[in-house]
View 1 (cartoon, rainbow, N blue to C red):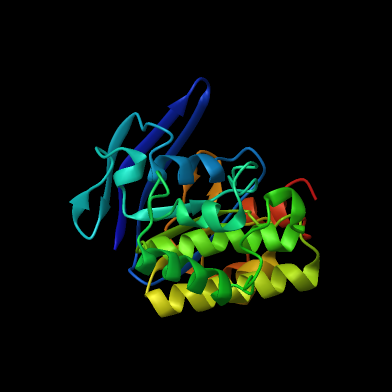
View 2 (cartoon, rainbow, N blue to C red; view 1 turned 45 degrees about the horizontal axis):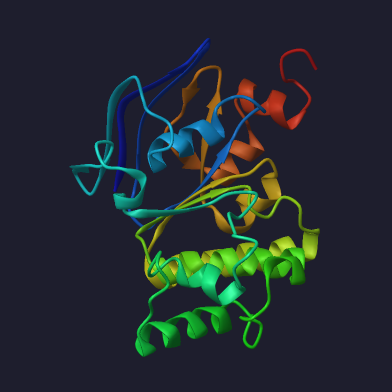
Length: 237
C-alpha cells in the first residue's frame, strides 16, 4: 500500500498536509480546486517536490529518501515528456535503458508495448508526426513497459476529445488491472473519476483527504468539492 504519514509540503505561502493510505491495486482520482495542490501532491510522491515533514511509504518501506528514478512508480504528465528528436520507439525504449542499448529481447518488448497501445508499425515516427492521441499512447506504452507497481497520472489526457479520452482512460484501467498496479489520477472531470476510479482523494483547503467512495462523494459532496464542482448549496453559490 501507499502511505502518506504526516506529510507536510511547504512552498512559500503554500501548505499541504496529507495523512492517508491508498490500498495496493486501488484506482483513485485526485480532485480539487485549481491551485489546491493536486499536482504538488503527485510531485512529492514521485520525488520532484521535497516535503517539509512526514514520510512516504510503499509496502511499508520508506521511499521519500530515494531519488525519483529509484522510486517504484511511473508518472505521466500533461506534456507526456517525449523527446522530440527521438522516434516513438526510442521514446518508449527509454523506459528500459536511458542509453538505448537494447538487446533483441528488449526491442521485442518495446514493439509489443507499442502494439498493446495501438501503435503497431508507427515506432519510427517522431512525436511531431503523431496525433495527440498517438502521443498519449506512446507515453502510456513507456509506462506499460516500465511495469512499476504505482502509476501516477497528472491530467495527461486533458487536451483530448471526449471519445478519445474515454478510450485512453479505459486503456489505463486495463493496464493497471493487468499489472495489479495502484493508480492515482489527477483530474478535473467527475466523469473521468466515475469511469475508472472507485475512490477519490480531495485536495483542498491545505489538506488531502483519505480516499472515499467516488459515487458517495460525487452524489453528496462536502463543501470544498461542491464548490469546485459548482453544485448548488456550495458556499458562495
